[in-house]
Image 1 (cartoon, rainbow, N blue to C red):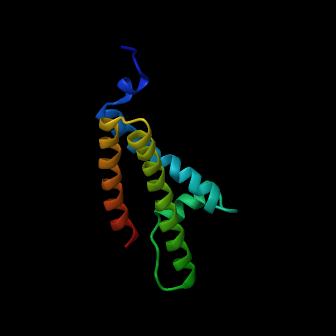
Image 2 (cartoon, one colour):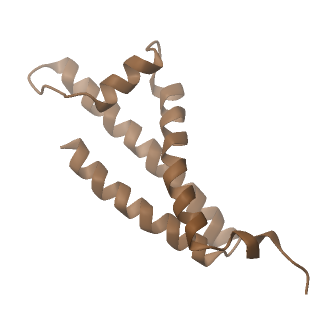
Length: 112
């Protein structure tokens, strides 16, 4: 039997690690796509800061926050697609799905 790289990476803990790292990559991608002319610190402060819902500018920042969260979760789902459907590494996929569900629950609380 030939040793495959999928046997090495088919571990639950590697899926958890990928689930923690990939939202940060999604955040960087969102900054590149959505950030336009903002510095990275401004983009981060708008994302993590308090939003006052009294004016139209706040609505724009709320939409930016939602789009950024979607980028973060989509990277996890892309990794899940490749790990589960293409490479068939099930234990790795369990870690990704578990953390994606956790991130989705946290992001629902974060948006409201």
